[in-house]
Image (tube, rainbow, N blue to C red; front, side):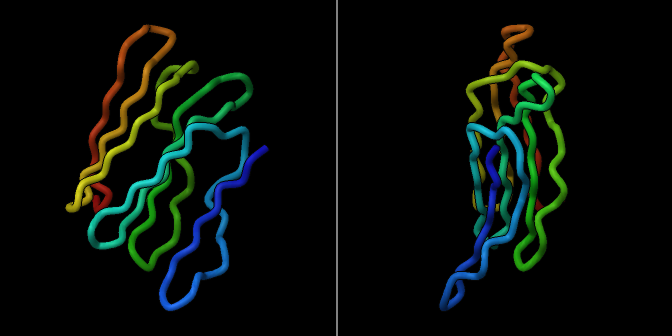
Length: 108
């Protein structure tokens, strides 16, 4: 069991705040140029290896985790975020042997 925490720095580090807890792996975090953040990870939910995500606006709170994969067996998680908040998440769906790619803006 792992707990994913977040902390921010402004003259000193803030106390850690919990993002999620579970059977997590392949955790990736990205931040755009204005401080908006996204975390994605693989999580074992009752034997299903799904991809989940949470976002955090600058000076805001982390959203509740959302499952973004439709398959129950995934691997090879990759995350990229550009300066304007466009995020790209890719992974291998082991059920169909397809590479899945999604795009979203953190700010929307």
